[in-house]
Image (cartoon, rainbow, N blue to C red; front, side, top):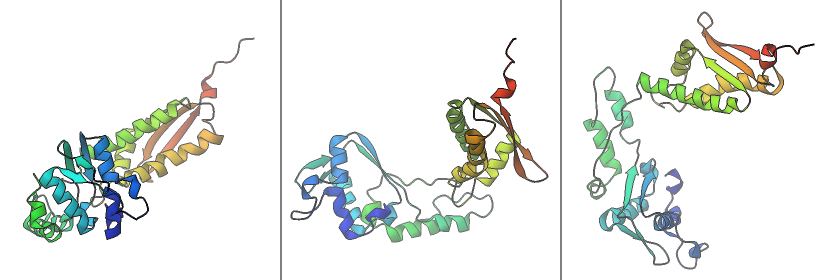
Length: 238
């Protein structure tokens, strides 16, 4: 919701007032709900939005409707609102050194109370705290990226084999406790996709082949074994 930090940007949700540019276009939020009255609406990082956005949401949570600039009512009664926030995360981090579970810690709740008014909090059905990603989940993220890469390589006739030790290395490099698994895409890009790209375009994998990725423990780096499909083709009979 960072694009709705300024007051004038709030009009995008319900449409511009009469006399302003875009008055006849309606609002992004109201139009979307009118077209899709049964939906899940995700408002990411809601704490970054302007206070006027909270006022709009109060009306939605109170009455189940929102009126756009043209007088049309958007029915929110069958819309599930999900809002994410980073409020209280730093406080939870400070309290979470060690293995003690600190869900709903007082310091974190105090931070949430500073940002969200009592009337807004009282209209929320529940506040859910998410744990840091476990090692198992991180490995599942690595596997997901590798599967997606293999789908792309299938079109080139290339098979990819990544050893378990190499997968563990990627999981360790791609996870940051503060940022979660966001760095993983960059790690996969730098350590799998880029090394493959040159071989796919100009090297051994131009006509397909096989790639084996393993971990060199001494150098703490990945190694790549490229096998051209041409190498395995049977010789033509004379």
